[in-house]
Structure formats: structure tokens, C-alpha cells
Length: 296
Ligand code: RRO
Image (cartoon, rainbow, N blue to C red):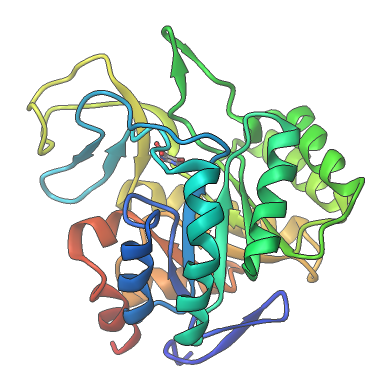
């Protein structure tokens, strides 16, 4: 398959099948300007929250010295509604000027916040909103905030609440690397809600320990972080395959986890994804990676 070719997801035109994931360089106007000029087929912005947040204390990002994986505990740093009310419409304008759709990745701490953030995305002219149900890095006084996608009941609560007033904007649901039974339950909840056109799989694997052999302090410490990068790929790929079997054709899949080469992209497309997202490899290699993959 020719990679550097336009595709359609949820009836939206994408420049090609490769885009950034919501990650560390996808939160500001400057980030969007850089992504617009890159070879990315779409621009994902976020994660966007209602309230602005500072990053978690500490290092935040660890890379295995041989690139086997990354670990992150960013903690959803972002400008919140005040920043995005002003800047998301400008980001959409920049993306569209470069013929790229804009996907707003949002995290609500309540179902009401998800609705508020969907409205923000709609009013800003975004093409799609990606409901991030898998962020692993919110801790308060040593206790971890529950990760919605690991609980089918919580996924149902959020999606059914949104479905009461179905938004006109296209909806993607981004999930964690889920174990088999929970994956089946969550897939069914997504189908039953009737509001999602896309499932993005996957976010990082939660609560991995920082280890020796990374670029950080070269030791194990008690920080827990989301595992991503190459080590995540077989897991996410298996999830894409299982999702493809579980979901109707009307729901497309965006794969994410360990993509850094054309072979990685092709593996995801063969497993049933329509496109892929990249995070770790963009941190490592920069935005020129899009063109390198698309032209190889
Ligand atoms: O900001 C983060 O720490 C973060 C988020 Br929102 C997410 O969805 N996934 C991740 O690995 N890190």
C-alpha cells in the first residue's frame, strides 16, 4: 500500500495515514504551526482539560538508552479552557490552511467536563474530538485517579451521558492497553453508545516502573509512569486486531504504540487500523520522521 496518499476516516479527509498522538509537543499554537508544516496527515492537539495544569514534579520523560521503550509521567500539562478557547480556533485555521484535519484530544475529570470539552472542540471548528479515557498519570496525595478505560462501567457512564445530546462533531474514543475481557466489554459499551466513529488504540501502559538503562537518573525509583514506544507495539497491535474483530465496519481504528518505521505502519494497517498515531518516536526523532516514513 502506498503510504503517502490521502485517506478518509469518519468521512473526513486526511492527508495520509500517519499523524501525531496527543503528546508533549501538541499543546500550543507553536506546536501546531510545526505540525502543520510537517508530513503529518492530521494534527492532534492535546490533551486539553477544563482547568490548566502544571506538569507533574520530577523528570516526566525517560527514554531507554537503546530505544526499547519510553516512560512518561507528564501529568497532563496544558493551558486549560482559557488557553484553548482563545487558541483552538486559530489552531484549526492553521491546520485547515495546510489541508489537514484537526483532532482535539480531551480529558474530563467528570462526565460533565467531557461534554464541556466536546462543545469547545465543536465551537472551535475541530474536525474530530478524541475522548482520552486512558491517561495514567494523575495522582493526588499518593492515590491514582482511576483510569476510565479500565472500567467498562465508567466508560459507559461517560459515553451514555454524552449520547443524551449527541454532538455533531465526529468522536474517537482513545483507550488504554486493556486485557482481553475488559477490552471486549469496553468495545461493546462503545458500540452500544452509538456515538463513536473511531477507536484509538492504545494510550500508554500504566504504572510501569522507571528503570536502570534510561536517560534519567540511572536507577529504579518509585515513580510510576506510562510505558510507550517499541515495547508497547505488540500489545497495541494485538488490541487493534481484537478490536477489528469486535467492532462493526462503521467504526474505524487508529493504531498507536511503537510506530517509528514503515513496517510498523503496515503492521497496524494489516491488523485492521485505518491510520496510526506516533508519540515516542517523534520525541526521539522530531517531526521529519513523518516524511521519512511516508517516503520510504
Ligand atoms: O500527560 C500525560 O502524562 C499523559 C497523558 Br494525558 C496520556 O494520555 N498518556 C500518557 O502516557 N501521558
